[in-house]
Length: 235
Ligand SMILES: O=C1C[C@@](O)(C(=O)O)C[C@@H](O)[C@@H]1O
Image (cartoon, rainbow, N blue to C red; front, side, top):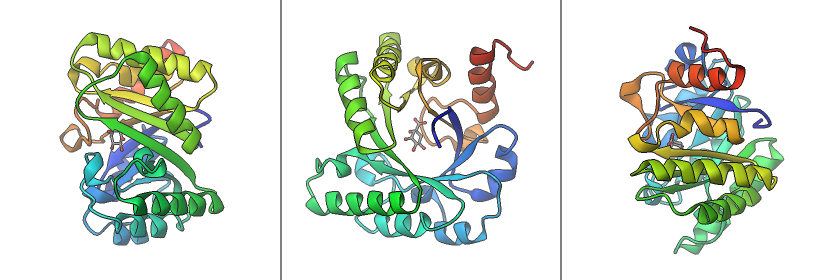
């Protein structure tokens, strides 16, 4: 997974999968936003492979404490689960609780054992650092996972340019990355960074269920990414 660009329909509700199938390559299942996530996984009969995310509250999600690793460990044992998201800060031991690092490392080992890809992720909910700092973050993330993912907050068009440049540089340096800016000034990066090597896009099936600010609806992002790649918009 992630050799080619993967468009993930981001959702807390796996019953959206049939609606996602026409446009998505995978489903990002947000365990932290879901009701009864393990029961939803038990009942899942969809076609699309799942990327499971249980975003920590200290990284902008709703999952509190180390218990979130239990749900992820359970999830990666399922056939439908092809990838798992783990926060880079935990993998790097940058979190104040040292148990985060050991839990994250154990989860990554278990994922590798199960043939499940690891997305090492970083979020900045305030700003977009300079391109050189972004490249460093991407290199760190890519070295900890099969893909290094970076989502930052754009407050001006220059932030989008910084992310595009960093995506290009990190990819040229041989790192497998996924990049995007959150918020309106950076929205177009979601369509454009795949041209420079970004390997994952995230979009809600229904705009009302967006999992981050500035996401395009799924069908729109599919159309934009494919249009930029193939020179056709499908319209
Ligand atoms: O990390 C990401 C990227 C994201 O924050 C976005 O900006 O699209 C959406 C999240 O659901 C996902 O886990």
